[in-house]
Image (tube, rainbow, N blue to C red; front, side):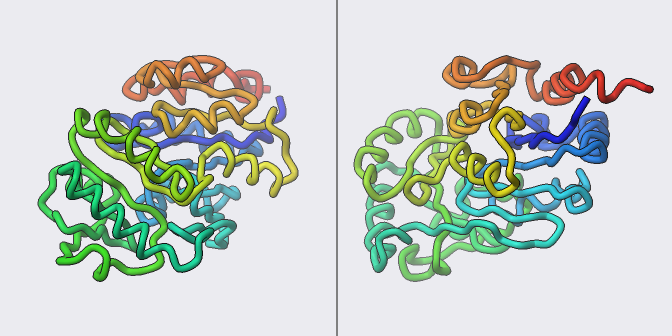
Length: 282
């Protein structure tokens, strides 16, 4: 069986278990499939710094793997470090990044949530003790930097912001924020406690379509796995979109099939079945 596919994998709730680990059997299977011609793409809302250690575990630099960070706002080739795509908040509206950050700061005050952003190996926020900021820090192994004034103390340009808070607050405010920024930013949730704030038109599905074109491949050669709302675009863009057993119901409805949960190694079980012929001894 031909293994020349792109295997696109969301991280949290998909490739990694609830301890944020790739299990040994999943790791070994993905390395084997890469040896046989597959290209692995890690597709996440995480920053590059928080994704590179997982890419190293999977030996993606040896096999032409790709990091699709910030939900597609930044794409990096693992073997060369070459940046294929990089977008910033307000880059389609030159000179508007200050206005966007000022309005996002207003939403922080209005909602009681916490505004944060990533830069290199650090997280910047006015509320460094927020428990959801701490969770992002643990997930990405990034240091938290507390700032007095988000607008003036955050490094520029900004790839992405997050508004973090309880699931109740995310549900209450996500739609209103999306309406307010509909012509300037892309707003959606990635977990029950993270609202993603992205440049306009940034979406995992659109990014993967561009990646297919870059490598001269078609959608039937793309298998994508996800569990959350921000994965719907890539599941529908893929020839085979696979929802995890723990996925949100809307994600399951958008998928072509459903595998076991991330705690049950759903990625491993699906790929083992799908590539059974290629993996069988000759």
